[in-house]
Each structure stands twice: as C-alpha cells, then as structure tokens.
Amino acid sequence: MIERALGLIEGWYRDEGWYSDGAGDAFDHYVGWAMHLYPVLHAHLRGLTTLEEKLGPRLKEFLEMFGKTFDRDGSPLYYGRSMTYRTATLAAVALGELAGQTPLNPGQSRRILSAGLRYFVERGSITDHGVLSLGWHGEHLPTVQRYSGPSSPYWASKGFLALMLPADHPVWTAAEEELPADQADYVRAVAPAGLLIQNTAADGLVRVHNHGNDHLKPDAADAGAPDPLYSRFGYSTRTGPTSLHDPSDNDLQVKIRRVWSARRRIHNTAAGDNWLASWHAPRFPLFSPWEGSDTADGGPVLPSARIDSITAVRGALEVRIHRLVWVPPELPVRLAGWAVAGSHPSDFEQAVAGTTVGVRAGELRSSVSGLHGWESAGSASASYGTAYGEWAVVPELLGTTSKENTVYVASASLSGVEVEDTVSASVDGVVVTVVWPDGREQEFDLDAIFTGIR
Image (cartoon, rainbow, N blue to C red; front, side):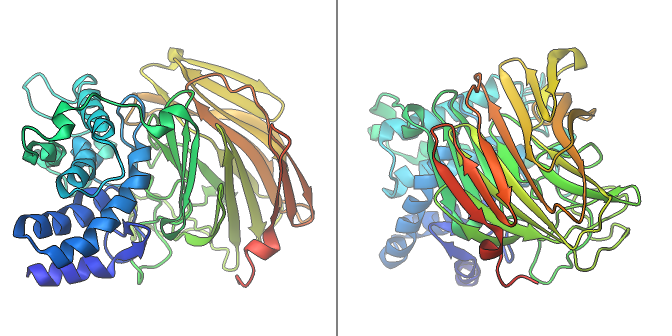
C-alpha cells in the first residue's frame, strides 16, 4: 500500500520541487501538506536514507519558493481547495526543519510558523465553543468543499508538526528573523506549475498569478461551471476569490446571449523572468449550484474561439495582456481586478476616471487601468463577499469586441500602500510593448509566444 502510494506521488512530480495534487494540473496547498509531507515524513521516521536523499532536495527547492508565499502578517496564500485546514499550510516549513532540508534560517522558519498560528487565532477562526469553524477567519461556507465535515478544520493540526522537533532545536531558540521578501521585492515564475509569485517589500503582500492551474483531470471535458478556487488569474494573501454566483474577480470574460464566459482548462504556454502566458477556450455554462461542476448545462458555443493571456509584473504593478482569437465582433468583454473585502458597503471608497478605477477598503487598494482596447471603467459588488469579509467590490474594465482590434491591455495593482508609479503600453499589430516606470521597455510578440496553437 505504501509503495503504491509513493509510486503514484512520484508520477505527479513536475520539477522545481512541485507536485500536482493528483493527475492533471492542480498545484495547490496539497503540494506542501500532503505530497511532500507524507513521503518525506515516512522516509525520515523509517530511516530510509536513499528515499530521503531523493525527496529531501525536492522539499528544499520547493521551500525556496513556497517560503515566499507567506504574508508579512502571517497569512498564507488563499488558493485552492481545503483552505479551511488553515494552519496546515505551515506543515512543509516545519517539515523542512525536521528533515534538515530547508533554505530558511531557523529564525525565518520560526517567524513563518509563529506568525501563521497567530494570524488565525487573532482573526476569529476559533468559535465561542472553543472549536475551529468551517471557513477562514470565521465561518465562510464558500471556503468549504462538498466533502468537508465538522472535523475537517482539524487538519490544521498539521501546522503543529514543529512539535516533533527536539527542545534544543534552533527553531525554538533562535530569534525570529526577517524574510528576504521583507527587504526587497521578489518575482519568480514557477514554469512547471504555471504560477508567477509576486512579493512587495513595502507592504509584505504576496500575489500569485495563475497560468497553469485548473484542477481538471486530463480526461475531463473542457466544460462545466468555473471553479473560483482555481480558474482566476490571480490569488493573494489578503484577498479571496468571489463566490461562484457573484461577479468574478481577476478574470477576462466575453458575453454572448447574456452568458459570461468561464475559464476552465488552462493551457500553460510560456514563461519569462517576470511573466507567464497561457490560453484557454471560453466556455459558456449556464447556472450551476456548485463550483467546478462538470454537469452544468452548456450554453452558447464558440467552437474555434481562444483567449491568449499574459501577465507581466514589476514591483506592485501588473500588466495584463489578452488577445481574443476567433471571437465574433460586437460582444461585451470584461476584465476584473482584485476583489477588496469589507464588512459593509460603507467600508469602500471608489474613484473612476476614464478607463481607470480604484477601490479601497481600509489600507487595501485595488485598481485597474485600461491601456489599450478598453472603453470604460467601473466596479461590481459581490454581496456574498470573500473569505476576508462579508461584502466585496471588484474593479472592472468594459469594452466591445471588434474585427479591427483583438488585443486588450490593462494595468492592475493590489497593494497595502499607495502605488504612485504608472506603466504604459503600445500595440502594433500583434506586438505589445510595455514601458515600466523606470523606463525599461519589454516587448511581447503574441504570434511568437502562442505559435502553433490552433
């Protein structure tokens, strides 16, 4: 049984320390709290040196990136299924110390572990009855999967793996240390997983841009309802995706016959130092009672349509490039930015000027600005909120498809401090040139990046 399980997990290894959560493309927190945890712990406890020598370096390579996905305030990245396990997200960090396979100093590991536990204790995850609720900060039903039960939150116990360390281990004796991302901005494209990690030192916020993670099995149909936990273009440590039946965040959609498109199967296409590219075929599912349902009734069909997408980042800024291929003209098109959450509609400040819109709640700011192809800006309210608040507002850009223009470019940002820098872009046919605030130019040839795709 154990050997069979190890063999299956080995088949899900993709490189650079990353496993998929089963067959297909699902790179979520199960990578740390399951795919690394169980095999490495098994090898360590059994003294299986050969297996440890193979698996240990993978864990260390994974932690080099994963260790940078924790917010300065202790929050892990809200991304993927089973987020009600909360502190289980810390398991891989403790495992690295236990196995002696971590790029982090003991003080850095201690910082992540203690801040992560403190984050949830201070934000209402424990009910008045002294038990963990089904949710994130407090109860939040969209965080819960259909397989979740009242005891599911207690997978959080994996976050206490550090208790296996001896009393004199440096994690217990070292002073907490700053993480590298506290001192300088960090960008890393994880090509095998189709993820782009973006940290900013000014606010300690982490964003991950998704160009390869859809949680679909290889033989599953490219159809059905979208899954907010996997289908969005971005996830962060201070925002959660909006619910299935609310306006979507971090999305690019076209509308036909009153149905907005969904992003289902994501085709990881190309990567650079600060950018990732993917494409997807827009699908038009009708109403579905749950996320990711493959039984959602099908709506309109655009059989040859394709949406090419690129996200490039620098500092707190993002540039989002989308090309609509074989999409009919005169259809509404929508780009959504980061959803900002609050407890009441009065918590939000909004400002619109031309094709730029900004939304703020407390210190968190989200904005989008049209750089090419967009006609207007506004916002959409999400009455079901997110895991971070009972109400949410999503900044958005709106336009219309046309034969003359198939390329749409926008800048976006999510920040805990004021972002004064701006970015510009120009489009010449299929070539998009981005000019960053420091004057650096970056060119994206869409035909070259998406060559060979039909």
